[in-house]
Length: 111
Image (cartoon, rainbow, N blue to C red; front, side, top):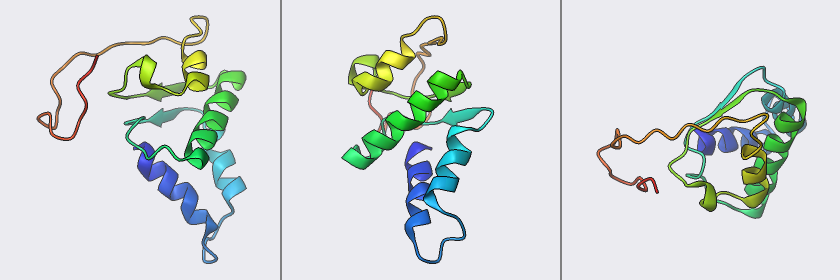
Protein backbone atom coordinates (compact mmCIF):
# COMPACT_ATOMS: atom_id res chain seq x y z
CA UNK A 1 0.00 0.00 0.00
CA UNK A 2 1.19 3.52 -0.74
CA UNK A 3 1.01 4.67 2.92
CA UNK A 4 3.22 1.72 3.91
CA UNK A 5 5.68 2.53 1.14
CA UNK A 6 5.93 6.12 2.35
CA UNK A 7 6.48 4.92 5.94
CA UNK A 8 9.22 2.65 4.61
CA UNK A 9 10.88 5.63 2.94
CA UNK A 10 10.57 7.82 6.04
CA UNK A 11 12.16 5.08 8.16
CA UNK A 12 15.45 5.69 6.32
CA UNK A 13 15.72 9.03 8.16
CA UNK A 14 16.26 7.15 11.42
CA UNK A 15 19.85 7.16 12.68
CA UNK A 16 19.49 3.38 13.04
CA UNK A 17 18.52 2.83 9.40
CA UNK A 18 20.72 0.39 7.51
CA UNK A 19 20.21 2.29 4.23
CA UNK A 20 19.94 5.88 3.08
CA UNK A 21 16.82 7.56 1.77
CA UNK A 22 18.46 8.15 -1.63
CA UNK A 23 19.36 4.49 -2.01
CA UNK A 24 15.90 3.23 -1.01
CA UNK A 25 14.12 5.81 -3.20
CA UNK A 26 16.30 4.84 -6.15
CA UNK A 27 15.50 1.15 -5.61
CA UNK A 28 11.78 1.94 -5.71
CA UNK A 29 11.78 4.27 -8.68
CA UNK A 30 13.99 1.97 -10.80
CA UNK A 31 12.18 -1.30 -9.98
CA UNK A 32 11.42 -3.33 -13.10
CA UNK A 33 7.73 -3.31 -12.09
CA UNK A 34 6.15 -1.16 -9.38
CA UNK A 35 2.67 -1.77 -7.97
CA UNK A 36 1.18 1.12 -6.01
CA UNK A 37 -1.88 -0.15 -4.19
CA UNK A 38 -4.41 2.27 -2.72
CA UNK A 39 -2.96 5.46 -4.16
CA UNK A 40 -4.87 8.32 -2.60
CA UNK A 41 -5.18 6.85 0.89
CA UNK A 42 -1.96 8.52 2.06
CA UNK A 43 -1.86 11.85 3.88
CA UNK A 44 -1.01 14.37 1.18
CA UNK A 45 1.68 16.50 2.78
CA UNK A 46 3.90 18.64 0.55
CA UNK A 47 6.73 16.08 1.04
CA UNK A 48 4.46 13.18 0.00
CA UNK A 49 3.12 15.13 -3.00
CA UNK A 50 6.66 15.87 -4.20
CA UNK A 51 8.01 12.34 -3.67
CA UNK A 52 5.06 10.76 -5.47
CA UNK A 53 5.49 13.18 -8.37
CA UNK A 54 9.24 12.43 -8.54
CA UNK A 55 8.47 8.72 -8.52
CA UNK A 56 5.83 8.94 -11.26
CA UNK A 57 7.83 11.36 -13.35
CA UNK A 58 10.98 9.22 -13.27
CA UNK A 59 9.08 6.05 -14.16
CA UNK A 60 7.10 7.87 -16.87
CA UNK A 61 10.24 9.24 -18.52
CA UNK A 62 12.02 5.87 -18.25
CA UNK A 63 8.88 4.11 -19.56
CA UNK A 64 8.91 1.67 -16.64
CA UNK A 65 5.72 -0.30 -15.98
CA UNK A 66 3.69 0.86 -13.00
CA UNK A 67 0.39 -0.57 -11.81
CA UNK A 68 -1.81 1.70 -9.72
CA UNK A 69 -4.95 0.89 -7.78
CA UNK A 70 -7.05 3.70 -6.38
CA UNK A 71 -10.58 4.53 -5.44
CA UNK A 72 -9.94 8.16 -6.46
CA UNK A 73 -11.21 9.53 -9.74
CA UNK A 74 -8.71 11.09 -12.13
CA UNK A 75 -10.05 14.51 -11.18
CA UNK A 76 -9.02 13.92 -7.55
CA UNK A 77 -5.39 13.14 -8.42
CA UNK A 78 -2.52 15.60 -8.35
CA UNK A 79 -2.55 17.33 -11.75
CA UNK A 80 1.11 16.52 -12.42
CA UNK A 81 0.54 12.81 -11.87
CA UNK A 82 -2.74 12.85 -13.79
CA UNK A 83 -0.98 14.36 -16.82
CA UNK A 84 1.37 11.35 -16.90
CA UNK A 85 -1.49 8.87 -16.56
CA UNK A 86 -3.45 10.45 -19.41
CA UNK A 87 -0.69 9.86 -21.97
CA UNK A 88 -2.39 7.26 -24.16
CA UNK A 89 0.90 6.27 -25.82
CA UNK A 90 2.32 5.01 -22.53
CA UNK A 91 -0.62 4.42 -20.20
CA UNK A 92 -3.72 2.31 -20.18
CA UNK A 93 -6.45 2.99 -17.65
CA UNK A 94 -8.88 0.26 -16.68
CA UNK A 95 -11.88 1.17 -14.56
CA UNK A 96 -12.92 -1.74 -12.41
CA UNK A 97 -16.36 -1.17 -11.00
CA UNK A 98 -17.04 -3.66 -8.27
CA UNK A 99 -18.34 -3.52 -4.73
CA UNK A 100 -15.73 -2.75 -2.13
CA UNK A 101 -13.96 -5.82 -0.83
CA UNK A 102 -14.06 -4.19 2.60
CA UNK A 103 -17.83 -3.91 2.59
CA UNK A 104 -17.75 -0.18 1.87
CA UNK A 105 -16.27 0.74 5.23
CA UNK A 106 -13.76 3.54 5.06
CA UNK A 107 -13.50 3.52 1.28
CA UNK A 108 -14.66 6.24 -1.05
CA UNK A 109 -17.14 5.12 -3.73
CA UNK A 110 -15.89 5.25 -7.31
CA UNK A 111 -17.13 8.15 -9.39
